[in-house]
Image 1: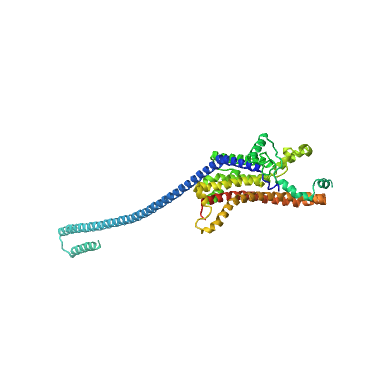
Image 2 (image 1 turned 90 degrees about the horizontal axis):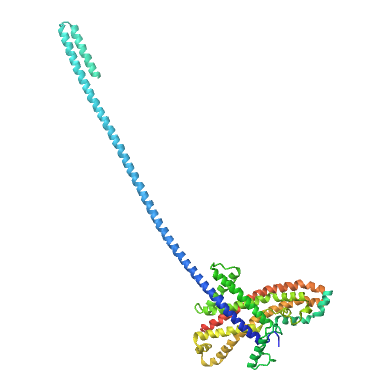
Length: 168
Length: 323
């Protein structure tokens, strides 16, 4: 018999016994605990993956919302800026117009006042001239008006007054 | 030419095959003798009516391979239990180098073999068996490649001198090669027997005793075909463990025999052609042996995987009967 194929029932029995013992020990202290452990770990990993996924969607939602809010704020800001610009322009125009109107008013007022004063002055001068001429006339009359010189003198005085009146 | 003379005295070329076979085979003598084991062996053999001269005498003495079986199982259990318990109890979830190798195999076998062939729900009850087969066979194969006991034998020889060691010394007996338990057909047949029992038990557990045996042959065939199909299926049942036995033992045996033959080239050349030829051939011989050892490492993993895979496949076949 070839020594490589000899049946050795003793070795066979020992193999069975030893293998079964190893199986029993490893099953209890190695494989079952390890498989439980791996399963638990895989469950943990799957759960955390799920959590990460939901966190991701949450984050995206928040991002979308914040973008929306930002856009709205931008729009509002633009509107506010545009509005205030318009208002400022309006008020500036109003102030300008007011100022112009007021200055015109002042000018008109001054003009009319000047006119009035002028007329008043002329009137006063006229009255003065009349008074003066009256005074002159009385003085002349009192000196017995006879000669032409006197009449000439009156005429020339009156003309001078007229020239003065025209000049003013 | 001192070496050539010395080698020539002890070695002739035609010795090589026998030397290689002796290297792989179990020891003819038990290396440890225990009185109670001897009486137990006798009692069991007498019970079955086997005489002590018979080939089938149940000798429970501790032969070299039985001793190595204890050694391998000690290494398997201590390594795996220590690593796994350490890994689980620390709760750090970070496996160390060896543990990540074990975890890789465990997860691969679970996802690609157990769940695939046995089923997502049923796999848990058969996983420990498949894992134990894989790691037991793997450790047996790999430890066989490491010449631990050749080294102890060498130390013994140097320390005590060959004459003083004596032919009955444990170190001497252990040093005579054959450290691959999985190259012994009796060992692989024992593991195959467990596979055999497992896949029959799986079928009976699922379908009940009667229905399981009915499942052997596909239903719905024309009745004359059953005279062919049933014997074939029945033979197949027993061929499966036999194939498992011979595949593993043959692979491990073949590798080791080739390894020894490559090494004996050195002695044969020395004995026949002189010392210089021996030195000349040594580099070739050693590089061949080195390459083959690398290949054997691969074969060790592959054969362990095949044994575990086929166990899972057979259990799956018994559970999922869909011809």
